[in-house]
Length: 400
Image: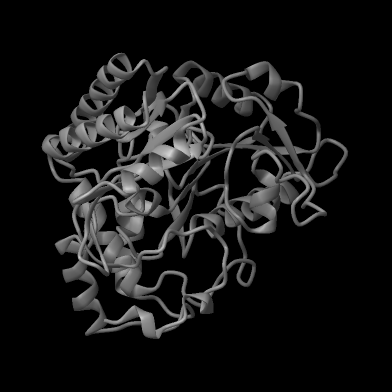
């Protein structure tokens, strides 16, 4: 296809994109409009948990498109029932609502918590609606999820914010406890803060937070849009801490590349009434068919242990890179990892890696002093070695 005949400016500019157009992808590899190949460690920001165009998703979507695309969310469809059942059978939750994006799932979690707070009023008979979230957390780009997020600068963007979100510090239980009032209904957090630089919540913190929320009759909401669906080596990141939350949100990897997310809740929390939550494409059979294919792969014997093993291997290789290039270290869980650079060279590394020839490397720098790695969960050790060699080449070329 000749892209020169089209006007790239017809797209609304919502981010700075390099001047290339991707046309094909398979596994860990992307190909642009010139034929150049790239080793992709973004994978759509952890969306492509099985890599680009995995055959199981291609087959599931193709088969479903030939049968039924959208019967309307006013009716049941088989794939959504199957996927919901698979999720509840493999988690501590009882009910599932499907949506299209992580932000939409998180918006639903906020609404559900506030509805539950209305039904479970405080001692004075007033509604409970405040949700404690965390500085540097990220929950999406709707007005409510931006207000819930603790990303610097977002408190003044698109003002006024949606009220009712108080910010604590991750891994600091006292900072949570001091924010609890008779208006508090829930605590909401990412088990691994992704956008802030892959910062895991400590196991002892998660367990103490679960005990604290139960003590005060508060809901515990885990945002697993990025950390869920096998990313940490467990099916869900909350399982790393051996706790059971009240509400969980999923996105990104659940669809293996197609727009799908989910809001899960325990039976006694799932208090929406007809008309309070919905959406034209929610529970779409094509998307949930893709979700079934993804979850089936993740549940195969040996898949999640292999994710843990490859995560440990990636972490070890990143630590060797730190020694070789005098960097500050690595952190993360499973195949969600970060490399601490010790200096603000992240954007330069991203650009130089992408421009490598004959093969480019796609990386992410959520902070100037850090790189984040989100490869496919079925990545090979050879592809890890390939990335490490390419990144080492870039660091050397930049004088580090």
